[in-house]
Length: 332
Image 1: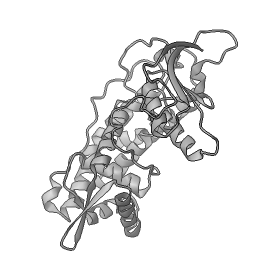
Image 2: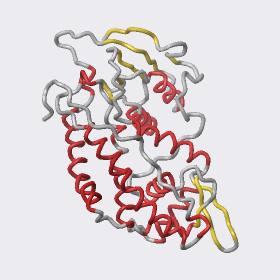
Image 3: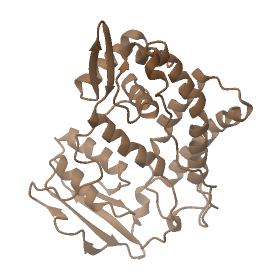
Image 4: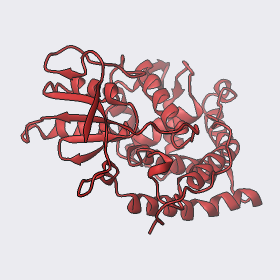
């Protein structure tokens, strides 16, 4: 791999100064929540139906909504307490009633996440310039928590390890990656852009990803969610089911930005299934929104009728038809 250009002033760091920023990095990061856990479900519900609202909601309404997902009252209230402790929710009281709302910190990070989730996989048609972002760093093996956090953050930015401490991305995300390194206190690091000459007996950067495995995951997503999409066409999904399915759909889709680097078309195998999966996600998510928000409105009306009409579903960008698959080797 041949070094092309340095990633600007501060691209290499052995000092404590911040080498770059990304949108929304001026606020603390949310603690990790397990997919499908009560805190994760609450964040999704509030982000999808109470986005941008300053008014807190009755805690009893949030507990009732979680019951639709099989979460007990005890587990739901414990989740609310943990989220307050972690700075995700604010608490207010009115008489004997308790209310919870998203903190500005949680609103900001959820906004960044939604922008990433809904834009992920959109093909802007621009030709790739053949340059890779490369990040190299050194983290002691004993500092396992930092290593795990760094791997998660780099994957979310579209990087993967070509070798253990050498990560690559087909997009110009070297500044963002370096900012993550500095935020985690990793000062023995460098980031730059490079080209990869096509030489015999070399490892191509795209081999950092298991494209066959990723294609199988996209196909499994399509197989799982096409029946729901078809049921929507028949009008056979009630509001409670719509709320549960829409939340599960979001949970399933938002795993992909951390797995798929959005490789340029020229590097993808033939029959690449992401365009079809993305189209299915966006259309199904949008069409489930009306009955799902009806359920949320119904629950909130039972506890605070004056807040019920303020429920609004988060909408997706316009759905464009899937593009023809690129030519190349066939996905197995």
